[in-house]
Image 1 (tube, rainbow, N blue to C red):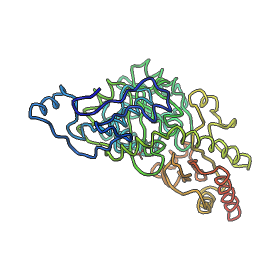
Image 2 (image 1 turned 30 degrees about the horizontal axis):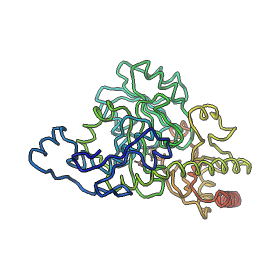
Image 3 (image 1 turned 120 degrees about the horizontal axis):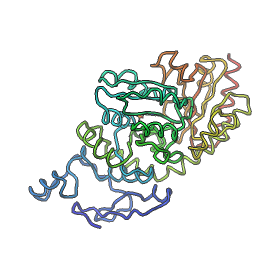
Image 4 (image 1 turned 135 degrees about the vertical axis):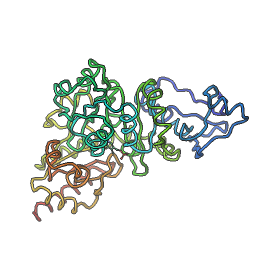
Length: 404
Ligand SMILES: *Cc1c(COP(=O)(O)O)cnc(C)c1O
């Protein structure tokens, strides 16, 4: 079908995931390009003054200004919505812009939010510091305690917010159970699904109303660009969040949308291969006597719950070195292959020390309450050969013991 804007829509059938990731949601221009076109333009011209009026009124299909919408960004949003099984997706410039839109776009002064304690550092900062500044009250609960969610509900509660698995402890929250409590009370559940990625866990199928991503992580997965997405029903994403996003402008650059479209083509392949490596490394480290957490391990305290809502154990492992921060630093500094960095979901394996970096802004007692200790290392497993990765981890571990 050729629209008035000169764009041919490619048919989007009921494709399976791998096909959707390669072809879903894209359109071709009249030139028939095979690779999605990059519309690197801030605005769009109209054929006539009357056409401009119709576009502004929404009576004529087409674009006006990239803060309001862009064809390349729309292709990325369409593909993400198909992948997630959502009616609608809105792309943002970063993951935090997506989380911020889901919170500030839906809430107002006087509202109340209940959030799980184990959140990404900036999400926790929003709960503890930013939302209260705008008169939005927050209660932090142990997300694994289902009764605690129920007990925290007040007449003015509007949202539940959680992350599962959580960063960096990999703590799992029962999304079905928390969604049921939310819906019973007429609230919405927002899930930060960054750690699992859309390949491994589908929160909307488990009952969530809104899913947020940092596309910086697995979706790009090659360390190039920031990005974010918020997904849900048309009523939520278009009607409620649409005006907030269009008027406040956390817009994803079309260039970054184009990179992310290309990244989606390989998302399932990359995440599956990274999960294979993570499973192997978790087992091998455990065998070597290290205290490891990964949802694929039989020793993982919530292995059964993880298996009931995640297709795989995920790409991130955490482990704790008995010698605390001193040994953790010795270990990181001895790594020869694996980089020390705070990104995750990347094709390159990355190790981080959450206690002194990503979670340092939180009080010690809060970090401890979340299960983060000074000896904890978070490892995002990439696409390198798992034997090379294990060799590097083992030699660094042995050195960290010698120097202790
Ligand atoms: C990285 C991350 C975010 C924020 O995403 P940015 O793209 O860095 O803004 C939010 N939640 C989780 C779990 C993350 O890992």
